[in-house]
Image (cartoon, rainbow, N blue to C red; front, side, top):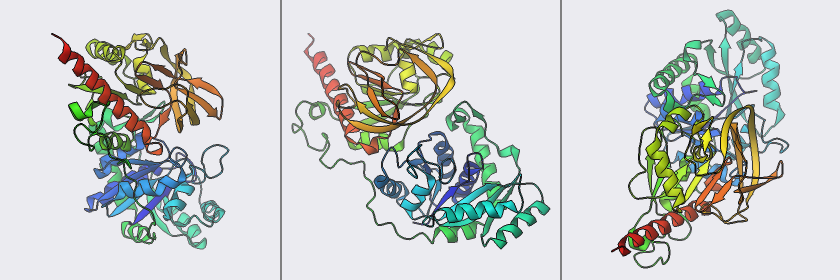
Length: 474
């Protein structure tokens, strides 16, 4: 699998511009391009998917463990001609206090992939050689294959930069001029997601492809990608080691309801307000025997027919609080589903949607808590253990995840908390109530596939109980 890792000395250098532009430019050549993002970020993969027509996938060595990075990559890249991995932060920046863990450098080493360094050259000339030399020599196991210079001011500026890098023996694989017209808008948690600006995002990705095509040596980049050696790992699979309850056959799965009623429907929130999701979650639920159906809380006034489980992931409900609140029929349907004991897994935005209110606007009222915007950004990796048995996780289940929000909810935990954080701080967080598991913590279920299977089984059992009760009525 030819592959490249697009990295930078620091955030803001232009990684997303270059990575997305490269993906789109190679896809325009007729190549099947597999898009990946190092780290937990949900937003950049949306632009990657737009550029390639394939799901953007995350490679996070903290949440999933270093041992899963290459298998998850191989799973996502199967059947493709080229894979492009966008890095996170600076090349060597990772989980705080954990050395290289979860850094772009670690991902590049695990994938045995050459690195292309994107350098913001707007305020330097010959010094660029010293900067690049430092990044190339810091870790000999990281193979820096070339540089793409971003925000170059003029022809003369380009000549000075090229001369300096030639002295340092580092190939220049591309030069991009300042181009504000292809910038993508940002707000409090980063770029505005694709789902909120689809037409504009399409135009932006097309402009990025044109900029990269004009400024980069695509043939040289492809040649570099082909120098990556084979990976000696089996691709990750969402299928469980033991058969799913559907595969066991009629009458072979007592107690979970699937034998009587087939695949349970699990409704997953989507649309502009709920854009944060890892592709592997739906794949795991499907492999566990569920039928995954997407609904939009901004537009749909009812849950999908036959809903047996509800997944409400991350996103920007604070941006859409008035519209979410105005959809009273769906709020009532979610509240009734939870009150009846239906299994619900809610992360971050989902937590806020289940609260009584968000910035004073009525929400679903499933939780006895109120949420509001805050000036403080809560951001970082967490190590967690499930405190209470729930439809998602048995008490004692350990997972790693991350928090990323500018909101607070009061109280921060219910009588039965969802998680106990063990690192970097000790506290309990979230809510478990009947079938509801709601928390700020974003998790990657590939690290612990049992949570997807447990949730699918809870959805099957609840579906069976509801239909049995209906059949018993006179």
